[in-house]
Length: 470
Image (cartoon, rainbow, N blue to C red):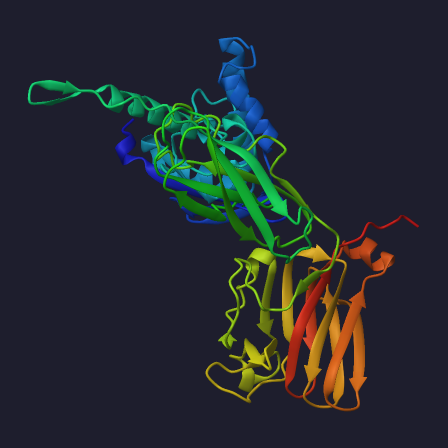
């Protein structure tokens, strides 16, 4: 069978914030398809599989082969389900004797990006599927040593190759004028000795200072190197959230670097500090370049999430008037839009950020225009549930103002209203009682409505509280 003539079955794996995964067939003889699945494997599953396949679990070669086959079939059953399986079988029939090459896109696959996809096989098949994997190494998914921080054999192979290539380069002698010049031995060894957060238990939306201490435990200078810090949200994947460069660390010397990040939700964050993360500096041990297990955890407290629209999730300040696209706060599980339902003259209206008297405010309006469509409802859509919400606003005119909480289908489940007899500031808060929480598992949207030009100063979200059975 000539693989060069094989048809392509292109799959894109996308991690969703709910802990599920979206599987998309982006190209195949049978066209496109899409479905959502539960996670077929956790990080612990992948780490244990890595121990088995790496010979660290004490199993025989036959047992390792059986574990590889079992995992490959389990992965196939999970991913190739429903419309994906239908598209796959139709594509196989169309491809005929030339067969299929499965091409994977994993840049948004979260933990599954480092799964051993080369083991993927249909149940009872004689061999795994022909899988084309992304060539670029992916980022770590947990704190700790190399196995904990970089799961999957491909990146491990790359790191080992870097060690081998480095050793070969420094073993090669250079000849000049009949003399053999041997480069001096490199004995640098960079490690992460401390990782601190201030405050250690921040509120969502609060700026956190990150301090990372590196030490060169070797006997020669390190030379220049790059470092990175990764904030891995529960169920999500991230590239380096903070990174920088250090020109040199002398032997037996420490250096501390600093950065900032903003937690965008409640819960626990598992983070990784990585010195020399791109292996540009030569050192004798690349396997100790991460913080110790347990040192990178941050637990956000249960305080309300106050969003005053002065900062973006990446920490940059909002210092001037701005027309918002709506996805600027997506990293905080929040998108926003102007609701022009039933108002054809305002069908293209957007949310705008206005700065007046040094106070950032949200209003609505048509692009590139002022004083038009300024009283539309502002809708906030959430990718994670909340238990209550409130807003602080400034009313330009007297009248009725309201705040609605929406369920996942967009239906109103709770409302607060206020009537202002004159222009001025106002506050609205909508809590969910235990009955509503039990029925809905939290709200997934917030809508602020008003009369006349409105200016929303702050949106405050509250965590979903545990519901006591009645």
